[in-house]
Image (tube, rainbow, N blue to C red; front, side, top):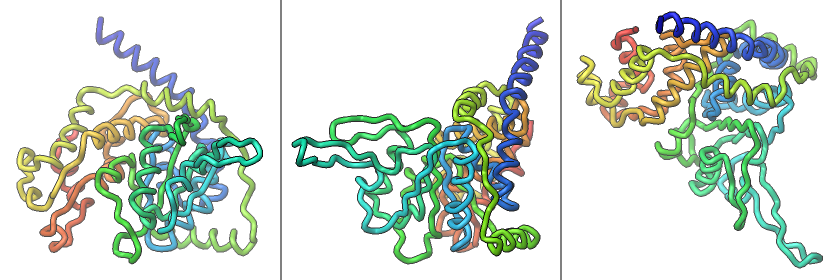
Length: 338
């Protein structure tokens, strides 16, 4: 009898998710008007938005930033009619330039609060590792707490709230690398590669025309907030939970999973935030695919983006040209799929 009611529950969840996720296709179609051939990035943006997380974006110089800046997150904000702001991180930026400050008004003889660009639904933090640690931590604190204190007043940030940060590869001069604990606050780290030749042809044509198609609002902010709540209801079986935990624990204790060869290559494994984010991202991926339950393929689809910035590689690994991606691949291939 219990099995029967569980099956009915899953069916009910499935039907609810199908209804709630109906807007996903509309939203993707609208974004595709402007963003050519970046299915991967659009999916990652939606996972970040639905999972109430944030996204760190890296790519070859000039590529990730152009895409993120001019197109992706701005297009998303137009399609859901949310507010958008962009913060260009520079070495002389101050925390007040991000969160806001108190301004003295001589006429009224009192201080008033001027809110910073962090008060928007969608924030593009451009070249986040160009600014000093103080500014980075002001942004990351706002991301984590979803609130900002200016003077003695605390303000809640707008909902939904999504930060997409771009960073320059660390090898470049004039960068302040983000500490591991700070990077851990990003739900996903997406790495973008050059577009395919057909897609780049369309990009050239759009730019030569000098105009992009107008993006219409196809989803309301309320729908997004409802979807964020619905994502949490996506069913995750205990076997999938165990699968996620096995992957995470294999980054910490590889020898327990017949992966002793990885031990000298990993300086630190994933934090508990990694397991939470992997579970949430897998639920979001299932939601985007309009399913009310998580399957192992959902976990495998997001595992690289959730963990690539959460595994430290040793000097030995660097000497052997082993990256965190190689380590994730070995773990995913070793752990038994439920």
